[in-house]
Image (cartoon, rainbow, N blue to C red; front, side, top):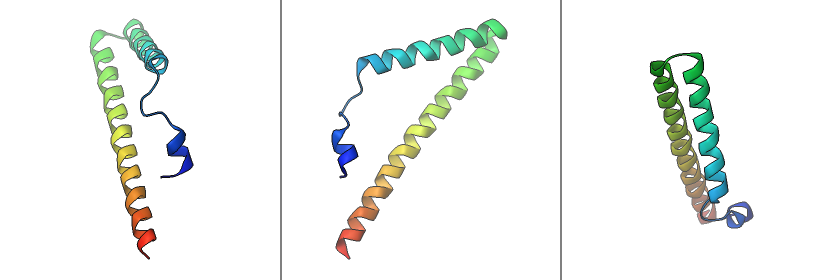
Length: 75
């Protein structure tokens, strides 16, 4: 564990989650106003897939870092 991960809180602040929710809903509102409901649904699905991919890749990156750190300590 490095010092950066030790400083981060275990959970995110409710303020950050609320702000991200507002931004996401505004993005969908803009997409709906400029296009149609189907395009808005596609944008929402695309954003959901992107968020999921970022979370999965971040988790995998942390796991790889842990494995490398553990293996380097053994040598």
